[in-house]
Image 1 (cartoon, rainbow over the protein chains, first blue to last red):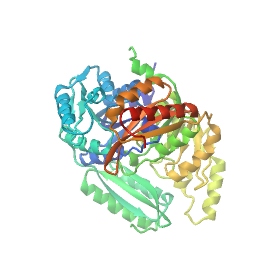
Image 2 (cartoon, chains in turn blue, green; image 1 turned 90 degrees about the vertical axis):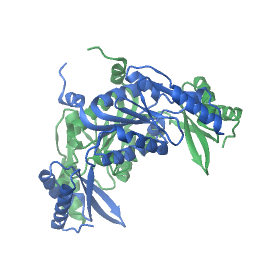
Image 3 (cartoon, chains in turn brown, blue; image 1 turned 135 degrees about the vertical axis):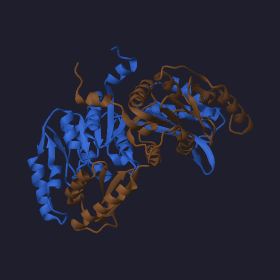
Image 4 (tube, each protein chain N blue to C red; image 1 turned 90 degrees about the horizontal axis):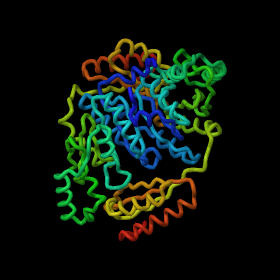
Length: 258
Length: 258
């Protein structure tokens, strides 16, 4: 069967990262995901753009399919959620399956968690909690300085906790494993004009700066409506250039840059 | 080439809805998406579960591929973002392309927006703003009571604005087009015990209530750590039954339901 352009496009590898959020609590609307935005801003400092994000449920087939699709397409995949002690925490097993490898209790992790639960008044290291020591074969651990149960890296997938504070701490252990580039910067020019008033000028600037994505975001402040224009790029000199051009454009449209 | 189990699974249709968030501003971390959670809670009242959510960039090939993948797999797709007047607002054209149809200025919409811009001091109805009147052939409009530029329904895809207040108003116009079922309800039992302490009891209850997904979510409150146990289902009697069972289980584990 002939592939359409989009199917070919979907199969193409893309530079950058994808985020995979695992958890029914996000899809039900019970919990507001904030990890995606945090990871995106954190990766931008390393010059790594996030190209796509997905949220999937706590179901093996869904997680495995998403891991395979994303890890095959992007340089890096960052997953959050599903590595706790309860029956719906199935991420580690799904990662092993997605990569066609096995999984068992990691001796160092098991020993460290045994010692931690023995030393602290946080419950017994029972069978459920021991599940947190299950790590796929060939995975490299990701340190968890807060609650010790680690994440892990399998291939180009970084498997992290869903709790924001733990996830954020884990990212710091991931940092040296990433190939960083020039940080992705941005500049913002806000003006009390409608999007539609400056759309033509913005489109013309986008043609003049094809390497720098220009975005336009309406806002309301103190009862007045305006638009924030955002340019992105990794070259500070070009960012300064486009900022000046944005300011000149909004002035020409009758506005005053804020 | 033989399909793996996951590829077959990914190709299977699933009951329920998917959400497609379109916009670089979400992927860059500049804007926090809240539409996903809102849509999920809104759909739960209609008994329609959200199975998957994706965030894609303002790029035609990415949007088209995601629309085709999700609309082919789920009963409904709800998209947000990319229907404004600026050059990066390409959602309408991408929807037309995904469904293999054309797109042009919708006469009624164009006339209404012409009258609105003539009557109000909100700028001229220039070429950029006229783009908001472009609607794919065969689409049904979705009313926008706030700022008038409409969304539209094409097949099983509901195309809405990204601005939360506008998106929320558009959902109300969508409501009568959906086949509602018994509302998806939930009950929550919170307790000051660690997840790992009640994991075995929770897993046993999940086997007893296989039709009701049970989730476990750690929390911290007033310096104390606890776990919220959440059951989901559409039968109020069964929800009451599982709530009693959850309370009995946490008491047996030494905790007091909050």
